[in-house]
Amino acid sequence: MVTNTRNFLRSFVSFKAKARKGETVRVQDKEGEFLFTAASPRKSLLGAAKGKIVFHDDLTKPTLPNESWKPSL
Image (tube, rainbow, N blue to C red; front, top):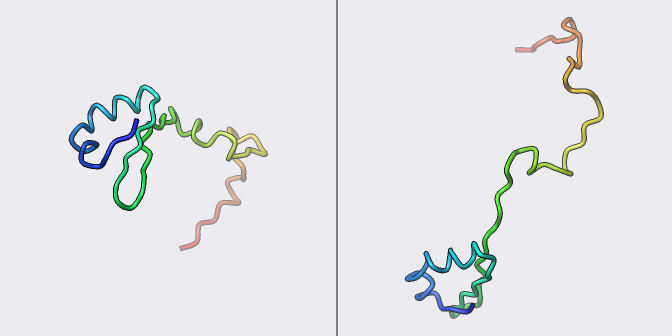
């Protein structure tokens, strides 16, 4: 769907509903064209980081013995 900036702002609620349904809204103004689409949010932090974080060890156990922890102030 193609619209101009004025109509997009006037009918934002209806354009937002169309974007949620998967439609792309093209908003044209003097400088160019903008695309308005819906992005699906990730459900969890782990889902957002999937494929980006690699675990090389078992993180359920302590990684260092207690005597190795020496805070510096």
